[in-house]
Image (cartoon, rainbow, N blue to C red; front, side, top):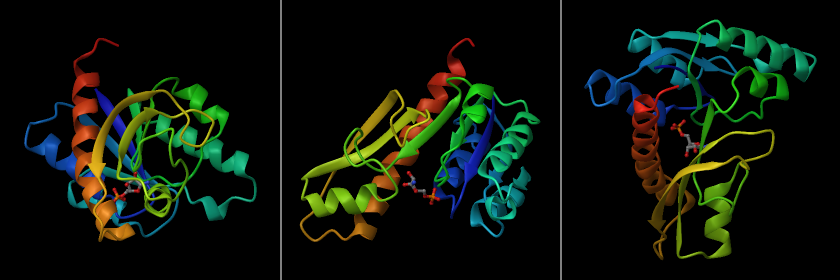
Length: 189
Ligand code: GRF
């Protein structure tokens, strides 16, 4: 199984996948790591691991559709079985989804359908929930609306800040993503 991982930020979840592959815990090939902007630590991590990295810089395109098409072409050039959004903070267009039907995975740091969007941890904390968690799903054209593949629960502590809670969620999110990829790698395609 070949995957392309898309990142916008630090890529700590990506690092967990890289580590799981290099330790042999996960049997797949990370064909490339891509970002929507220059200078992400996520793409640096891929370089350090000897994995191809690329940037399709959102800011360099006047039209969103053109960015979307460039991203689709670039990702497709690596012939992935699955594309994984690992903290990729852009909604992709229908053309991208059509190129990878049911093959675009996303993770979200909340128990969907609660708290979708860019601030899932902050919103859960502000609401005052006692448990939250993370979700791995197939991404569709909506914001965190695709079919759910797996979820893990994380307890909210009285003294949690957005940062402390997100760090604990990410521990579960990494494990959940790796386990989901392991299951997918064992399924016939
Ligand atoms: C994850 O919690 C992801 O769900 C959210 O941002 C975080 C990514 O962190 N959208 P990192 O870039 O893997 O460190």
